[in-house]
Image (cartoon, rainbow, N blue to C red; front, top):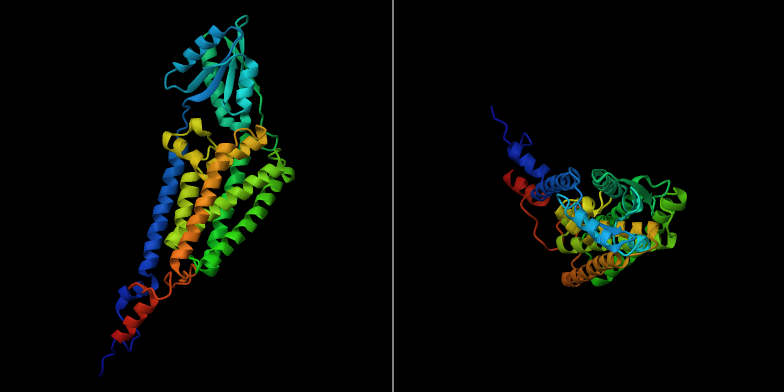
Amino acid sequence: MTQPTNADSGQSGGFLAEIKDAVTTRAALLVLGVLALQLAFITSYVGAFHHPKPSEIPIAVAAPVQPVAEQTAKQLAALPGKPLDPRAVKDEATALRQIQNRDVDGALVIDPAGKTDKLLVASGGGASLSQALEEIVGLVETGQGRTVRVVDVAPTAKGDARGLSSFYLVVGWCVGGYLCAAILAISAGARPANIHRAVIRLGALLVYSVAAGLLGAVIADPVLGALPGSILGLWGLGTLVVFAVGAITLAFQGLAGVVGIGLAILLVVVLGNPSAGGAYPYPLLPPFWKAIGPWLPPGAGTYAARSITYFKGNDLTGPLLVLSGWAVLGSAVTLACAVSRRGKAGAAVGSGLPDGPGEPEGPGDPDVSGSAARAAR
């Protein structure tokens, strides 16, 4: 009796061959990349938020007699762990002006003639930061037999619990930016075929950014009543945030193909969101996140949104320059990559094809595996 062969039974190479056909080498590498991104996400968020600790919070110290203010500032600067960065100022008006300009996060106004001092805070800059100032200064005052009266000079809106609405608005804008760029890759190739198509993609991203910025600002206020600042100001900020993040994503895709989407998520979500100063403003974050936060789009956007909403638009120059820098850099890299491609379009994400026509497929790609299987039969 003739025994059935592998070809007769429909088996070309056993279970290992089936695995190679089902999961290509490229797919396996991408899955490992996703695992690494997931672990980085966990590490970044837990690392940033697991143990908030005040560190050199800028605070002004005012008193009717300047030597009293200077002496108190020295005492606060000598606290263990250096939770405060105090500076003596001329009077309460100067201290208030510095808070409104975002030069300091609070101010202690001393009354030498009485036993009760005044602590000025600005919960619009972050409720957790204001609470930290109240706790630290309150303990110091209690230790000296004095009491402190807290005055919030930039309170959050009724619909903005703990001052987090600015952060979540910016996070939403960032998500829209990289998703819009990713969809362009899914539909028409990760890498544009030429500079004209790159310009069109950037133009489409700009139109989307204008719409997303406006709608986000309208939802935040007046629809939800969360951010009572200038709608025009938030609209402009939202447009810039969305376009900057989208341009970064397009640039990464131009450099690395589909992997560029993961790189954008690494930069904006894994590193940017926990360091943005949302739940815990910069003086409460560990050194690494405190250092990188102002230079990434979520951090620059959150700081700017709070300035527009609660501080009359003061101290916007730095954050806007950061966002503009990312937008210009992302656009320039996107265009440069398109020029260097010389007409070779990248394959659409999810197509299973290599990034460019004429590029050889890897040994784990379906066509190669199928050819090998047919040859084996």
